[in-house]
Amino acid sequence: MVTLTSPLTVLLASFYCTSHVFSFAPSSVTKPSVLRATSDDDDEEITLSESDDDWRTFRAKLVMGESSTSPSSSAATTDDTNDNTIIDDSDLDGIGALFSSETAQFTPLDPSQWAYDSGKVIEQGAVILGGVEQDFGFGLRQQYFHKAVILVLDHDENTFTKGIILNRPSDRMMEDDVNEGLEWRVWFGGDVQGLDSILPEIVCLHSLKGKEAKEASNPVMKDIQWTSFENAKKLVKKGIASGPEDFWLFAGYAGWGPKQLSGELERRSWYMCATDSQTLLKELARQSSGVDPRDAGLETWELLMNMIGRGETANGCSGNFDDLMLKEWGRGNLLKGYGGEVGVARNPLWGDGGNGFLEEMDGSSVDDKMKEAAEIALTEDLKAGTLLRGSSADRSPFLLKKQELHHSLLLVIVEDDKATVACMLNHPATKGYDIVGYSKGAASLPLRYGGDFALKGQSPLIWLHCSQKLRDSGVGSSLSGQNKGIYKCEQEQALEAISYGIATPSDFLVISGVCVWPKLGGSLATEVKRGVFEVVPSEKLDQVVETLQTQTILTKDNLAENMKILQDAWVKAADSRKTASDNGTDVVLTTGIGEGFDEDDDTVVFNSDKKVSELADDALQKWIATFLLGAPTLA
View (cartoon, rainbow, N blue to C red):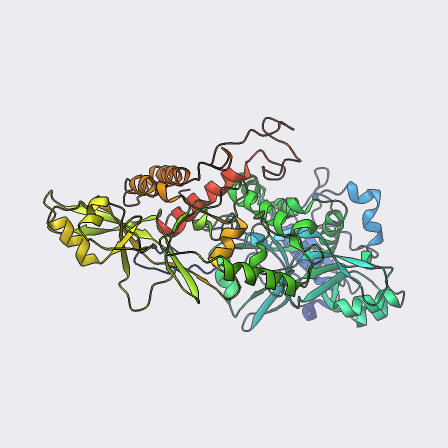
């Protein structure tokens, strides 16, 4: 589901289970038949009767029967029996029984339930499990796909594959306009027409057995069907369903184009799993009854990974960077207090889930908020030459996306009525600019990644300096229009000053690419107003630039050192009138369960002792290693 592109190829490096497969169509097993599974010790007959209406159960018998002959088998079995083919074909009678005491005793070794690795077989009713063996995971982008459990609703290899994520419960609610006073709990089903879409697509899963319920629904697998939200409300109104508790309501879905999913399976982005409806329904019921959305369904993924024999893989990545980022995504998008209302598109002016800047609506309309934001943008324009630094808040606004802006140093170079254009100063890349004719020998300046865009009709490289000697010599021009601050010069001017000995190569910062904030829909000035960026005092400019000039061309060996300088320059850029915590000083955490852990402390990731501020630093380093260095596994 992830497509990586390098916006500035001059800077960004490009990088880009053997299972048993049985393909039986339902029509091929409608009549009674006997199939024989053989082993070294004996022959075993497996009979499929007409009453066995779940043909996947029959296929599972074959798979687990064959798997039992191998010492590496991971089929779902019990310790006190050697009969791996006996499966209780009775399934759940509606979902009310899911909350019985029997559910609490559920274990993946229950012989009435089964799951196995189905290799690369994609079909309706199959389950897609998020992969964890690819070099580039979902930690930096689309965190909701990390360790996702996705039920395939529809599949055609040549057209489209559609599924819904089963393990992202939220505590957000939707009102019922048919049944007065009822509310429906919403689950995050995927990023296409999802929770924050103006018109989210709603899928209601259920296991109702009545004729009218089935006629209003689309079958997925035995005892699991889906219907529309409108139909679900009507079924409740007619008394066919007892209420919203008979359904799981998913907003959004995951989609793949022709043969896209097959390609991602080849890259180990996913694992295919076949399992029975009872396993899925019991897991849905468990998640419905008190699971904290901030845990983001990790336990469900781990359960199925163990059932298909990938428990060692699952255990090896438990609690890793991607897990922590997923939990932060869950906090920002699945909790009612942060996610906002379902069906209202989130405007970037209000912030993004998980960044700590989401403003409460407080009864204000969308129009009121837009008007307020427009007034801010019109009255608080920035000026060219202003240096900004990324927010000093413990919960970075750039934790879940655009991590390159976390603790960034951003220089405004163009400000007009259409847009603000700025460039980042503190991201040296793997390429350098070779200086020819320097009196002291060969020299190479690090090219710095400034942003995703280029200025039309201008040189692709931006040369900057903050030297009083060069100012006095007339090298370049002031961005602010005053005889101070950071100057921008032409490449020829810089090279001439170096050749005449007026300057050294290290006097200059060379930037490739810019960032753009259009005035329509939210400006950079608005972001400053909200605290996403902070203005660097002019008296700090020389010190900040001098620090940045000590960074070198990025390599695997100096990644940590360049990161240290980046952070040092960011700290030096702070406004000394602010508090120590605002300037990057560590905050002492309240002690909770375990050293440094407090389950109610919002400065740490849920159910961990990891500071959110440290996770944001890790995410920045991961971004640099991935997109600038081309080594995603390094960080």
